[in-house]
Every structure is written in C-alpha cells, then in structure tokens.
Length: 232
Image (cartoon, rainbow, N blue to C red; front, side):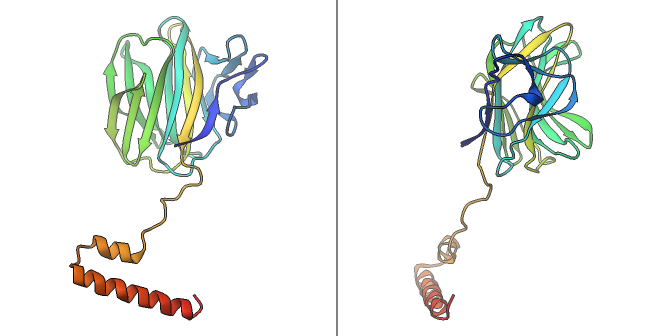
C-alpha cells in the first residue's frame, strides 16, 4: 500500500495540532474536545483531556490502514482510539484502541452511526507497554485491530462503508497524560477497483467447453476487428 499521510509530530516549538503541518498529506481539523499540542521537546502529540481530530487526506477507496504509536507520560488511564472512515457530516466511523470501561482497561473496536456508539469487540487487558504501535485495518466489512504487530481484535460489520477520512482521539482519565506519535495512513491513492477483465477472459472463467470457448473467442475477435474498422 502507498503512504497517503504521515505525521511524526515534529516541531521546533510547541504548536496546536491544527496549526501543525504533517510530513505527508493534508493537515488536521479538530472535531470536538480540547486542544491537542505537538510538543517540541520530544516531538510527540500530547493531551490530558478528550480531543478528537481528523486528518484531511482522503484515500482513494474505503480499504485502508491507520496506525500510530501510543504511550503515557503520567498515570495509567490515558485512552486513545484510531479512527477510520470518518464521515464529514455525521462523524460515523470505526474506532480501535484502548479505553476505560467499568473501571477496567479494554482493547476495543467500536462503531459510531448516527451519533450512537456500539462496541463491536473488546478484551480486558493489563496496562499496555508504552510506545507500542497500534493499527486499524479496514477491508470491506472486515475490521481488525493490531497491537505491536499482532492481530488482537477482529469483527465483521458493514454499517460504515463510505471512504471518509482517518483521525485519532485521546482522553486523559484519572490524571493520565498520554502521547501519540508516528501517525500513518496507508491505502490506495485515486481509488478505483482496477481494470475489468476483457470479455474473452470472462468467457474463459464461465466454465464453457474448449470448443465453445474457441467459438466464443473467435466471435469476439471478429467483432472487435469489425468495430475497429468502423472507427471505434
């Protein structure tokens, strides 16, 4: 897959995320919450309360990966979610990451449709090692979450099919302060599902006998020649 957007959150002085220029791709827009800050001292994105941002880069189709590194400065309650297929009007989307539910830390995949959240998958797990890479993978209705290179959650859901854009959310819980780094959006630029097969190959895959295939192929070649002669 091609790199469509990338942000190492590098800055010469502290700056609000919306004023920050990514390494590759479009800039950031705050959807809701507090202001996230790119901290120059260690080139990371940080926040202590709810912040929800989207990146302006639009992939070519709805099958793409979004990943980032995540960790904590203070405490053990910082939540983060990687977001994909964010709809600009409704904010319908898929999310994957770490969040607090019922006093426990969970690894989850969720969807938001019409403003309502539905948890699609989740596992209670110990405090995450800081600095691990998390990746949300979306291919058709297959939605997967990877942690440190291993698949940890997987669901099938077809409620959010628009291309949308990628984004991230961070929330400080119980005084936690967290960070994100190395945001990466990978997919196909320009969209499209490839070039459809020529009719002769569709005939071949239809299960016709060898003789029928020969006759059908010959007819296609003759028809193609006549069309070319006719000025196609």
